[in-house]
Length: 324
Image (cartoon, rainbow, N blue to C red; front, side, top):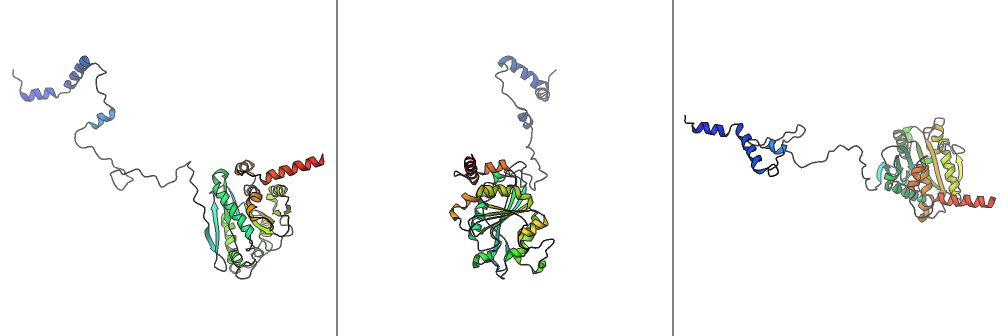
């Protein structure tokens, strides 16, 4: 019987034909000479055009170049932004009250430049502290510091201790037992600072200022007394426990009586040399800033020159030698 051309074609493309052909190749050529086919190639060997994948979360069906997600990835550390003061509020004389927030969590501290206003050395030391903490926040870690460069810019500009309205700001803070003016009658600088304390809920406030004489003072409420005494020993400063004899309406008396947070006033002599401020007082301020994290403080001390702690060690050794 003659087999039609159509029957011969159907036999050639029947499922048995590729198997027989493949077996013959194995016998003639061996396994090593055969081309290798991956599972992906097998799936792609289909007739017709390749279907375009559809992504439900994209507006377009065709995928474009890879774009990083806008959501922050867990476990990654963001690179700090360049240091820059930001205007946080305005004074009575419509001057900018500048500050910067460093860090995103952990132990919360507010650092104030001198409330006196015309206190250039205190402002310079506050600036140096802010820049150092900003540049070393990856090492320090575990902190959130709000640094207010000068809460009395009117006094700075006018070379006076009062603001534009002639008010000495560090007599305008109230307490639970001492009520001052109502909020609407308070100076704008005071309203701003009290808002910072109320909203930020810091664990510690540090007030940096200068004073007359050749010996500095560190005044501290009871919760910060231990580290304040330690710093006084390093620098040969005098320690004062707050509220003590602090005047009514001062930041120091108000916070220490309210017991809402710890407060420290770091007052160093006006006779200090500006070029040596950070060398002389920087590591001591870091100790006050970082609470009881002594190991972190060691990492923060990266100076080539001797620190105040080193000088304290030498003084202690000298005293021991004299006692012997």
